[in-house]
Length: 342
Image 1 (cartoon, helix red, strand yellow):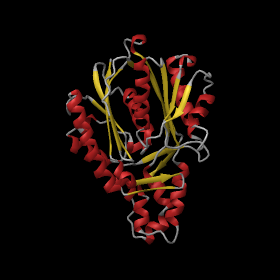
Image 2 (image 1 turned 30 degrees about the vertical axis):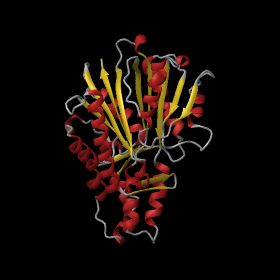
Image 3 (image 1 turned 60 degrees about the vertical axis):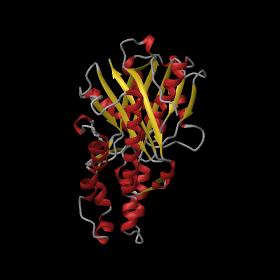
Image 4 (image 1 turned 180 degrees about the horizontal axis):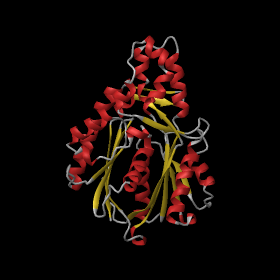
């Protein structure tokens, strides 16, 4: 696959939606007390192994399109952007309202966008948002689109509820517990971003380049639907960071990336162990990585734009700095994107 360089694409705006229900790792373990006692698992295991203290949830019936649309409405209100200028809409969530129609069409309706908008879903596990940015950037770069809206909305409450029920079943053993352990790390939230032509926004942050790689032979390491998700966590982490190392090497060869190239690392958030191994393997400074997983858990494709918005809110991104958006998703897939924050 070619390695894109972007010359004409700017970030017009970004916003997030925070789910209202705070659920701690201790709260989840309280529900699991009978099975944890039977399996002789220590109290505090979830937080100690993952570094996730809490995560946020929506009500079980809350739809992904609602979260995505709320983030988009926040973005439109914050920027004053005219929604009728949007001509491309990508919904990039793992969770979807239905198998059909596309969640993007429901978001389009919720936002009252016109019929001139081309909308569709992009599914790439936890990398959907970065892939949506990349495809939208190519469309803008080629002149096919002028403004693209990328959204994602995740509600992990239903799958968390079904997983707790599964782990409380009498037949659930230690293998069942740890195969489903990653599901207990999931959080919820929404994010939205508008990309536009750089000529129209000369002072806006710019997309510079991106690199992607895949390891489809490892697609069996994480399998999930709304009834549950089973993961070989250790094998997934090892294969994922190996793929990330190859992807970063591509970026070094094609764009001159080095571990010192980026002032801030905005990454898909999984856990403390994954973050540490990712940074060690790639030679990156973990202090440069903005962490949201302790308070929000793993929000799938929402994590990267959500974390970028948090970093901006906390004043962690300085004008003139280069940022890396990075992630590893089940499949396996890896994407990295370089941004210049003007």
